[in-house]
Image 1 (cartoon, rainbow, N blue to C red):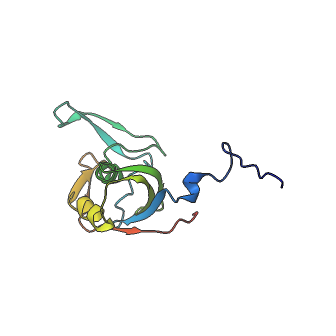
Image 2 (tube, rainbow, N blue to C red):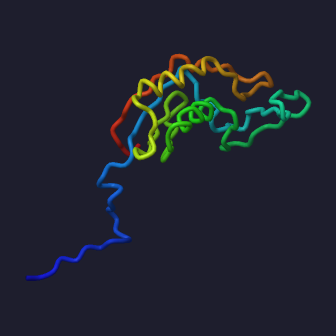
Length: 151
């Protein structure tokens, strides 16, 4: 009887894929909630002192197509990754982000628990095109499970 050889390492399909080791989600915020996640070249960033207060004297503009520190998306994912491992993230538009979490390290009991924790952020002020920043109301975001799809 002929032997069937199995490739153990280096294959395209591996055990991780076969076991479905990631779960996919979508977060939808209010209009322009995630607009300043990536700078359009107009985002003003203030310098922060070690105690967390901003200094109006020291500010700079974040370059075009660069990630924005302290953005609404960053604040949301600080909450989410406090109890899970982020595998993938995709900014779909100014209101929508799709992301994947590793199943083996997902401490969220339900999507509703994750959504409640993010909503607890309330209204946050994030860097934007003015020195005072932009207020983003995260209290009404929705997070849903999502099937994997290439966008």
